Length: 128
Image 1 (cartoon, one colour):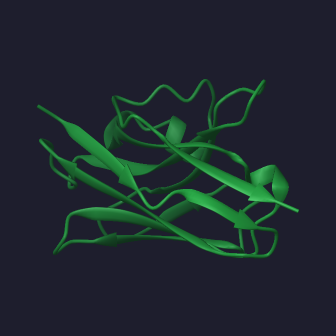
Image 2: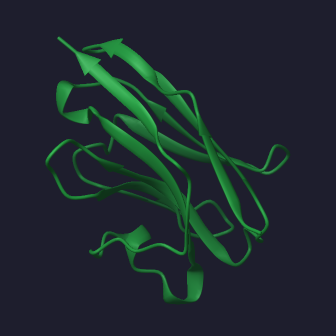
């Protein structure tokens, strides 16, 4: 059974940093793109960033590029998201998700962002 468990969320002030971690099991990273999505109150779910291939290739949405960095830790089997220079509009519930790589769409920014497996989500709040 596939599982994705998020950790590392919380509250931070504008300009601060947080590191999210997604521990996954029950599927092979060789077959799945794994990444982070978010949903803010009253808004649609959107992709944030994904590791799209086993060589570490990645996708970022425009609004986080240069501020967020995604990485895969093969020893721990985690996909981590380092978030720097946080802004109030980064406030959302962040979800870790996995998508079969051969039919990848959500992880390369194509809505409606329906991945194959989802974590339960973790709240990130950025206050001014």
